[in-house]
Length: 340
Image (tube, rainbow, N blue to C red; front, side, top):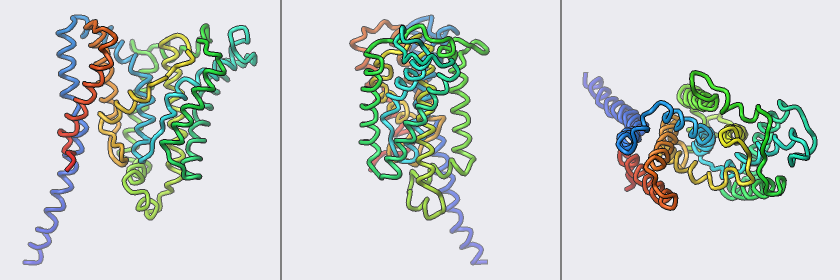
């Protein structure tokens, strides 16, 4: 009888600890929702247009491209790595895909390939850059931050050089398709981002690959000892991230209606902000897709409210940064992760 009591006593704390961790994780996922609700209330007070369905559609549409690249960065961050070059893939991949399609008179390469081939080139370029990043980080064991920073600079220079600093207009309709084609009143880019986050969230929560990503980010040596092919998984995540960044570039191309030589320039700061305030840990092994998505929506709503409030452009960046810091502090305390 005493043995049973001891077993019960020893099991109860462990079960309580496990339940406590689950509760904290769920709380962390929901940490930004109060901030989102507060911003919605502020937005409705700032302008009666804010809650108009057309404005809600505008927020979702303008956030779709950012969502895809935040998803890409979040997956890499969960493994404990970084990829700064995603912002350059965001501009470089669509530009190369367009330039193999459009004639030389429109500043293309003169190859004039079919439009479908150009779209495939966009995705292939994104995947190829991710493959090279993965090779340098995984096989050569170079520092991910430095490697991807160098790749960011290389791709940015190649984009400016290939376009001669020009903006590419009059692209084939397919390059605008993610924003022009709608379903149930929303552009395909919004649905694509939603489906991508849903699939990623389900994989991370229920599939062994998702558990492998968390294990690698938490302790790569322990993951390797458990039989996880750490190098292969990380390499694959880099390739997937490159493709997602290329898709994000296609989405913003459709939104803007052109490809500029500085497309995506400086975007990586916003990407990291959305991921981090959404609960994705810079140390790896922590974070969910729901949290990352709420981070994207938070920044989208902030930008929209500031625009409706007609805040002067030279103040927007300061306010934007302050709100990001405030949201990060709230998420940190609400998630029970205060540093000791």
